[in-house]
Length: 172
Image: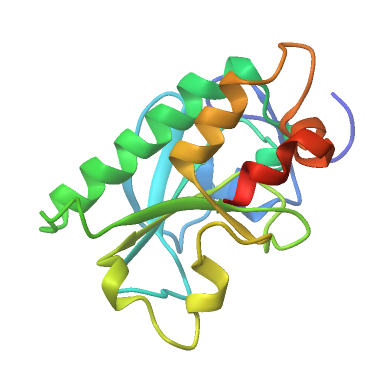
């Protein structure tokens, strides 16, 4: 195997230097996993912007939402489902007051796909609201990612859609 890569719990390659790969494959003793399945895990954000702030990450190393393509629609949907389930398990019930989304490059802090699950969205910290404002160049809602992935050809990645002139409506 190439230097810098490990084999994950499910046989996928992971980046040895990626903290999220270590967390996803349960090799980080400090992170409490709140939910997990064969493909992903969920844990608390270390710098929460809301009373409930969780990250859902795939076990397989995917750089960011710019690396996604049409075949990832199901993954994104399952990530959102896990985020909602964790909110429910943690006692949060008002699913109308949540925000789930991804930071867009270059505004990502860890180069591993991660869905931010924030609740209540009405209580996102004022000092951090700029990082989680939908329809900006830095943050895109999960359902918008799925919509965009449906509209691109199977051979193109999300980045191609972002760069096209047709994508001006992406942030609307």
